Length: 368
Image (cartoon, rainbow, N blue to C red; front, top):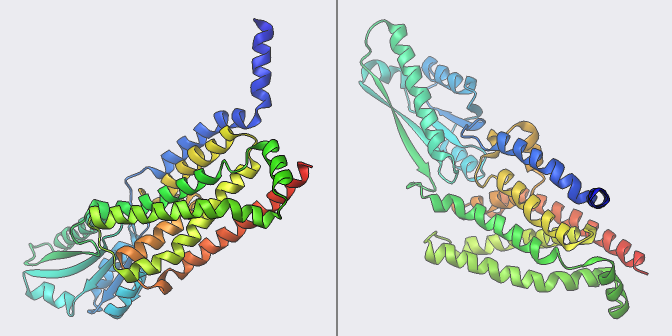
């Protein structure tokens, strides 16, 4: 029994990837869940369109900026600026003060304050609720400072842009498509190469250059994943009744093709560096999927995460493709509005392509 236990402990120690995965991965996931899974909405980006420019509007704007849940990032002069920022996903909420805001408060019983909220955000309703609560607290402070019961009331006029009825499927579907594409493409190619024997057979039976070998692995998987993407869009548009125009579909093609190729290359890279199919599936499924669900912005706003986690989220392709989908499909915006996301996805594509090519050349040489 003693010798058997020693043998099993040594076997487990030799499988370094299993040992360190079981030892460190649960602690890492607890840290991620504790930091990401929260109902807070810190970092809400606020734009202010102040047509009054009086002391009260400045005071309320300052109150928003000093609140830990809000940050005033833009002070606007026109509705055109507001619409442009909202379409480009630069702001989450916009406060619009009417002309003579302070004077109306003194002479009228009700004063309207327009609050525009990006309805494509999963946390849109909560952001609007926080903003309304802050305004009510500020109004109560004004009542206490005046010493008498005022004859005015601030009435927030909430407007959810791009999703006025707050349909949950509209907010969830883009993130779900992004995650499913990443998981599906990665799993299709993560078992493309199966150990040292596979590399030797490829070198002997198909004497082709590494670029042709990688292209042969990518093309069939790309065709399969592209058809699957079309079926997902069909389910979303026809069965879930999420509107999509032909122009939006054409705009999505470029970003989607780059994202799918990036995900396929990531799967090939995992296959090249993995020592076994079990290790490849673990990396592609459990680790990659877990990080993507938490950090892609599908379920939890990235702005509410700690700064160090926001940097890690920027390294996940699913985050950028989710932003691209929401911006083009739900806003909708022009292709120029998502140029940043497309360029970043192209960067991921080049990095993974270079990694796959380098590892392929190395593995073919070692198989000789």
